[in-house]
Amino acid sequence: MDIEQFYEENPQRRTSEEFDFGRDWHDADGTRYELSWIRDTGELYAMREPVEPVIMDPVGDEYVAPMSRKSVTVEVLGTVPTLEGVEHLLAGWPDEMGKPNSLQWPRDRIAQHAERSTGPIAADEQPEQLPGADA
Image (cartoon, rainbow, N blue to C red):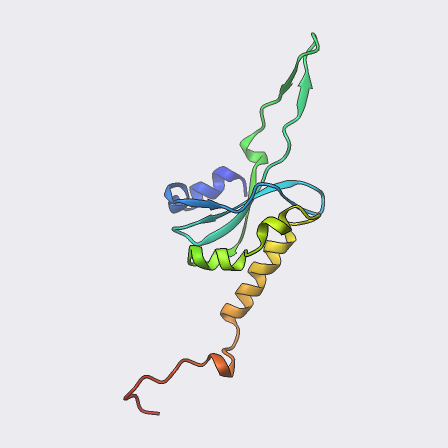
């Protein structure tokens, strides 16, 4: 979806505090993305930022052509409820961001997080019995 649709779809997105996790993520095609997390929704999203075309006018001056907001698109990677959680999930992100197809790294991390969050509870992760509760 484009950036305007993204913010119109949920008013909390527009008013919430956001935290940036780098502006130089790239997909397999080399397109640049910015990675951000929205406090009020818990959404971790990647915003595609295509490079604006540089145009030369008839006298040889160069300028950056305006870019349509429709060309700035958003992909919600997943939801992490807390800032501490997303910081833990993305620990080491500055080292990963500069690698080829680096956007796949946060995609994989959020997918693994979702699997752990929705999968069966391991035996060692069972909640403790409350004192006085019947067994």
